[in-house]
Image (tube, rainbow, N blue to C red; front, top):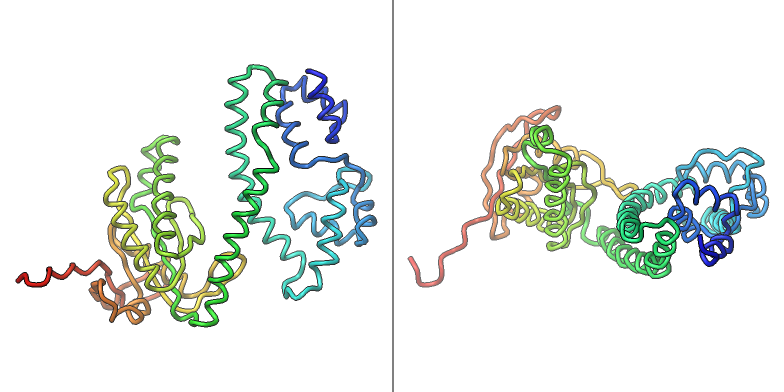
Length: 351
């Protein structure tokens, strides 16, 4: 290893022992990334962390667990000055503020969401490291290039910008509910018909490509109509918005999937009404109804609850075919509607 890399690692808080272990074990790039992301020398155990931050040990432990990490034994110095500052800010600026939920709950929810983001980032950065390692063929050279090409300050600024833009949009969605009323909101589920059989026949790469293509179409279609993807679960996507937005998402997603020869047909269920929003997800009878409608829909079919029909029945462009006493697993029978696009009217002057 050259002196420049060693000096940089030492300056960011790595010990000589860690550098030696990383060099002999072939994980210099990982040590370099570790130092980029969390620089500084560990100086505090859990008791020292709490004392320096002006918090009690029980609170420090609880928040560390809420972040998703195991308890740190007393005497093991793993925390840095940045950890002290973060705990101080959390305890003295967040706890007891106007936010009604307890601090531990806030930390758990936010950390869970950020952990999913971090998992995606780790895959992207891991692919970058693999490509650099093949190109450089030397562990020390790979570590140097990784630090340069990652350019974490720029990456962090981009993440902060995306977060701000997404938060602005989320605040508009959240606060506008108070103006228009939650009854005009709708939720949709769309999934790939026959996915279980496909997962048994396709190899891992082919299945991942299929899911990636469906996810790409779903996210683009939802964004096109101003709705929001709540989550994806395997081959299923859940989205919310105003009733007209959600209906247009469903119909156009079916159209896009039909045009893609690689994808099987989609089935969709839609319902409208009050939704319980919590921790970035949605719950309640309306969500359950939409999910059951999706289970009951035939491939290529959009099934809508009567609440969706009632909101949009007078809107042009939709065709509704009622299906009375439609059985839904665990929910009895419901009047539901099979929803399609209405045929376009002929041009003026044509018979």
